[in-house]
Image 1 (cartoon, one colour):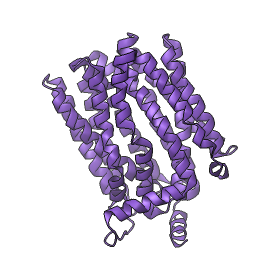
Image 2 (cartoon, rainbow, N blue to C red):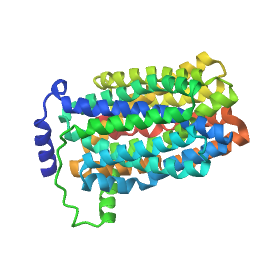
Image 3 (tube, rainbow, N blue to C red):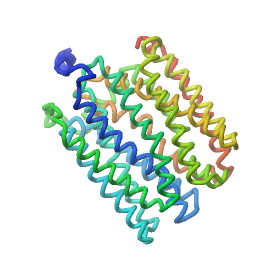
Image 4 (cartoon, rainbow, N blue to C red):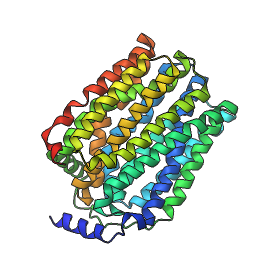
Amino acid sequence: MGVRAVKLSQLADFPPLKKNYPVFRFMGGNLISFFGDQIYLIAIPLMVLSITGSPVSMGIVAALERLPILLQPFAGILSDRFNRKCLLLLCDLGRCILVGMIGILFIMGILEMWMVYPVVFGIGSLSQIYNTSQFASVPGLVRREDLQAVNSLNSGMFNLAVFFAPGVGGLIISFLNPGYALLVNSVSFLVSFLAIASLRMKREERDSSKQSIWREIREGVEFVIQTKPILYTNLAMVSSVFGTTLFLTLLVFHLKDSLDINTVMIGWLLSAGGVGAILGAVMSNFFRRWFSYRSILFTASVVGGLSILLFGLMDTYFWLVITNAAGTFCASMMSPCIITIRQTLSPDHLLGRVQATSRLMTWILMPIAAFLAGILAEAMGTNLTIVLAGALSTLASIPYLHHSLKEY
């Protein structure tokens, strides 16, 4: 209760959301970084396709980028022990250098796959630390009652980037090559670095000398297991993330190689998905006024999973756009709800570890899914693999029916 009381008193010091300018600068930096990330997501598959022409190589790259998920417990400890602002700055700077490096090497025509593998692993590692620290930093910037609105806005900004960035990335790649798109991504990390550097973020004093690393990890795991709303949303996300990873790993490759859609149209299809995602983020805060988290999460999970399944069955551009937009709408409506549940129920000194434990639980199968995507695509084609992904994502809706979620 003492931790809760301190946390509430700290949140009371913050101004109303409309006047909380630091948190808007924080989200602005995130928007620029998100923008670059979306360009990265379209540039990397096309770069690998250009070098190797193999879906298996794309699966290996995607798996290596997601493998640092296994380091999540340590990312949580870093976030809870050290200055979160410094961690955010270091991660932005590191990603700026790594992404820029492979972009330049590709432009020079000397990039080889053995160079790509360690770089994407490094980018993935820094992203894990950044995302955990970012999650843990938000409650220290706003009032508790503003958390749902801030998470919805942050998700909306992310999806605004999803709307604009792929189209821009597609144009850059169409006129130049993926290397230049990665240079844009590198600059976005630099802008995010400068935005975060301008903030005055409170540094909570944490006594990290009395506990071992393993005891700290166990403390986060025990809290997640005991807190049923967090536990059951995590269990639902395991199957959902596995299916979604199968889908996303093959998305660009499927559109380009199997359906012979040109790069610019791929970019606009992904951007159109951003429209649905922006609407989903906005509607999340609206629906929360009328429905429980359980109702929102279950319905969105079912519809989102079916949209992936239908995507695998479609071969006309119009319906590909519609099903992709429906999926992004549902995913972006769910994300702020899950994040707010974790932030609201977790004490400040456990925020990093709760997020890290939750991500490890929900994302642990992502590297396997990414690798299997390439293997399954070779064996039975991208269409059937995406249909399988949709079926798995739809089944993920079942744990959301747990009664503990009805209370929130």
